Amino acid sequence: MTAPLIDPFARAITYLRLSVTDRCDFRCVYCMSENMTFLPKKELLTLEELDRMCSSFVNMGVKKLRITGGEPLVRRGIMTFFQSMTRHLESGALAELTLTTNGSQLEKYAQDLFDAGVRRINISMDTIDEQKFADITRWGRLPQVMRGIDAAQKAGLKIKINAVALKGFNEDELPTITEWCAERNMDLTWIEVMPMGDLGNEDRFGQYWSLKDVRKAYEDHYQVTDLAESTGGPARYVRLEQTGQKIGFITPMSHNFCESCNRVRLTCTGELYTCLGQEGMQDLRPAMRQHPDTDEALEQAIRAAIGLKPKGHDFDYSRQRADGQMSRHMSHTGG
Ligand code: SAM
Ligand code: SF4
Image (cartoon, rainbow, N blue to C red; front, top):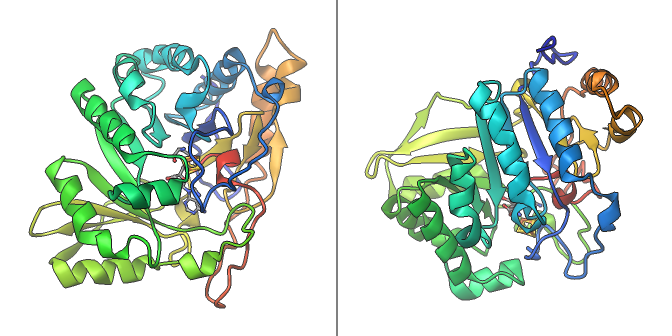
C-alpha cells in the first residue's frame, strides 16, 4: 500500500463513490429530464478499467467504495465488477462495498450482491404511494421496487431508505414512510433537494423543503433526541423515542458539512470530482490508458487531483433562489 490520500485541508480521503453508468431506467423529475441524452457507450470505462481505477484508490487507503450512477444495476455485466471487488474485502484492504440504487433490479441481483460481500445498501424512494411514485420517477413502478426490497431483505442485505424531501409532495407522508421503515426494520434518511442538472421548467427552490422543517414535523409526532454520532459524511441523526428509530438528515443547504468531507467521486468516464458542488474535475483516463502495464502514473494523477480538492461547495438557498447552481446532473457524478 502507498501513502494515504490527504487533501490540502488535512482531510483524509477514505471514501470513493463510483458512478458506473449515467443511464437509468427511471426519470426522477429532480434528477433527469424525460428525454435525456446519455453518453455513447464507447465513452464508458470498461469493467476492467473500473477495477483498475478502484484498486488504485484502495491501494491508496480508500476503505469504503459506493457504487452508484445513474442506476448502477442497469450497467451490463455489473455483477462481474462487484465480484472483482470481493478480493479487496477479503484481503481487508476495503472495509465496505456498497451501492445506492433505485431498487428496480434488486429482485434479480440481491443475492449476487450479498454473495459478492455487499452487506448494506441504500435504496432511494420518496413516496410509498403507487401513483405518486409513478409521477415522481416518471418511469418507475412501485410494486417492482417493493419486490426488490423483499428480495434484498431475504438475501440478508440491510437497507437504508433515502427520501428526497419535497415540499407539497411527500410532506404528508412523513409519518407513514417513517412507520413503514420501522415495520420493515429499515433506516431512513431525508435528503434536501439540490440545485443540480437542467432545471428547465422545474422550480428547485419551490420544491425545497428544509430539513429543519422536516425535523419540526417529526417533533409534532414524536419525541426527538439529537444523536452525536457522525459517519464522517453529511448526515446528522436523531432518535425517535417512541419507536427507537434512527432518522438521518442530509442537509447540504441548511448545514455546511464540508469541513469533515472524506470523499471523492469518479464518473463512468474516469473524471474525478473532488467536490460534488464544484465544477472542477481531473480526467484520470489518460494516465491509466497511456500506461497499461503500471498504475504508477494513475496513482500520481489521483494524488495530484486530491491536491486540488476545494474547501467546500457554494450551494445557497438563503437568498430565496438556488444560488451556486450547477448544470451537471447528479446522475453524471453519482449521487
Ligand atoms: N439511481 C440510483 C438511485 O436513485 O438511488 C443512484 C443514483 S441517484 C443520482 C442517487 C441519489 O441522488 C438518489 O437518492 C436521488 O434521490 C438523489 N438525487 C438526485 N437528484 C437530486 C437532487 N437534485 N437533489 C437531491 N438529491 C438528488
Ligand atoms: Fe435514476 Fe436515481 Fe436519478 Fe432517479 S435519482 S433518475 S433513479 S439516477
